[in-house]
Image 1: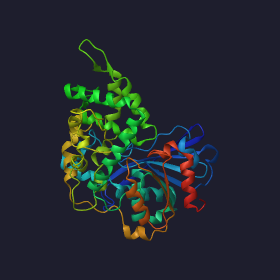
Image 2: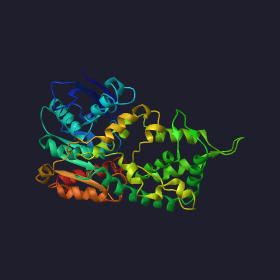
Image 3: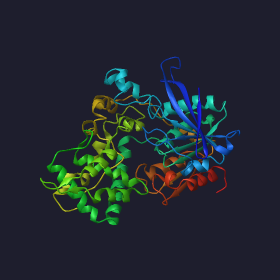
Image 4: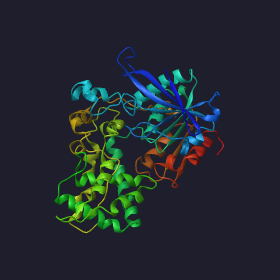
Length: 433
């Protein structure tokens, strides 16, 4: 039974759906999905077209909005919106260190998690669509990994789409994970250079923190082991519009004087715990590289292997000189399953996923080449998280796709730019731009 309730300016309805774990076995095991329906209060009784929102990730549940902020307010002017928690996230049969042991040991857990990629998410969406819209196609807005899912949607079930809107989420159609990370580390280096140019005082602050971590074992509240490499992953902040500023503020007051000498402050450590922990989104770590698996080649901890090709990210080597320490971001490493309590019980499961050689294709280039669904994509110039060159190559491979390439926003443009970003994409799919 669905439950409806109100927030300022909106009516919300909790929706739950039962879908197969494996869509190739519709009579087999099932899982439950959760989604939140949102409609403007003044339009609650109207027959409106549907817009499905697919969150970035992988591993993040849909936004828990209050009212109608950001892009949602613009969408509610003409759509009834469905905010879907993709399988394994939020309230949709969550997959984490607490629930996965119900599957059995690491091998069973790894087998289970092979069903948590974009192809399964698309099949979920189709099952939900038939129940929600009565079979009518809907518009999909895919942010980041949600955009990857949208390209899979165009490949697997374009008949379900009235239009597709993608923000920062055009994937490479045929790149191995190694190709993705070989493109990522140079982007990360550019983001570091831009940050240190803006905040030159942070060069010494970052070096001082790293030197402290090399000399002291630091365990954050909750049991997270803070290594130099873990500290370096704060560079993920540099991919968002205000991330450089937030990183600067985080670094300002890292140390306090103590009877034993300078130490990392409790406040700094608490903020780091919130930034570094995967407790809220463990699937991000577990299947992050699997979202690039499409053939018989294992991902084999790609980001870790490829990092060795970029020695400028080696903290110990950097600290022997006087140059800036480079931060990293949007990469998952095997040591994370040793340092993070939310991931430690899942290390063997993660190793098994990294070794798999039976990945199936997520995209259909032949079908995309004859696409008839109106598609528009915002591509952010020098996006930290999704390579711009890869995105533009994919844009050219999808028939009729129209791009808006901009340096006005970073990867989180749909949050920061909200109504303007959605307005622009809607105009593109409607041939109004």
